Every structure is written in C-alpha cells, then in structure tokens.
Length: 132
Image 1: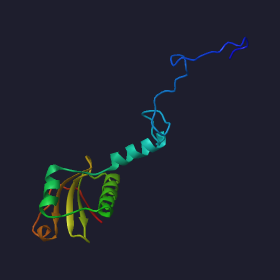
Image 2: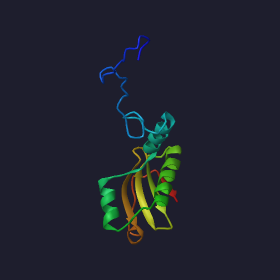
Image 3: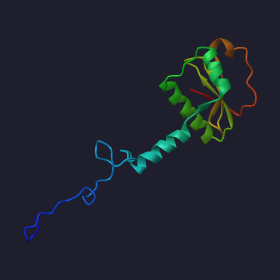
C-alpha cells in the first residue's frame, strides 16, 4: 500500500531481477580461484615436461610407467639442466634403470630407453647428462 491506501501490485516486469547464476549463488563463469592461483597454474603448465609421440610409443612398448614421483624428478632434472644452459640432455634414473633423451629448450622427452636396452646404446647430440 502507498500513503493514500492504494494497493500497489508489482508485475514481474518491474520486479528487481537477480542475474542468472549457479545454484550456489555465484555468477555464471565465476570460479573459486583467484588471479594469483591462475598465474601459479599457468607457471606450472609452462614447467611441465611433454613427451613426443616417439617417446610415448617407446614407453608404451617397453611397459614403462612414470609415476608422480618420477615425473617430479624429471621436471626438476630439466630445470637443473636448463639453469646450466643445456639444450639436449640425457637424464638417467639409476633406480629405475631408465634413460631419457630430453630437449631442454622445448621441455620435451624425445625418447626413452630402459635397463636392458641402455647397455648397447650410444647417445649422440647431447650437451649434458643429469643423474636423478
């Protein structure tokens, strides 16, 4: 009612409209991450080590699986080699008897060789070796 006693009816067209949102009340497109988290995720993705098709095929053929700990060792080894100015490195994991030829510049594993096949190989065109 207004001051004169007249009943005022609100039509849906003039009712305040809440913008569409998610069931939790947040706007569509919003997320729980902050800008700082985005930069952390982006930096982490830039540090990630990729595997070439050839390397992926060699790992699959030889039944080699890299767990999270080994992947972390690989990232750290690539970081160390990069800090020293390496371009192509042989990364050796003595525990697993695994060797990986890695393009440090591209952060990409080019090929992988396991224990029985390491002994008879010659690795060329590398400028560094990292033992993890």
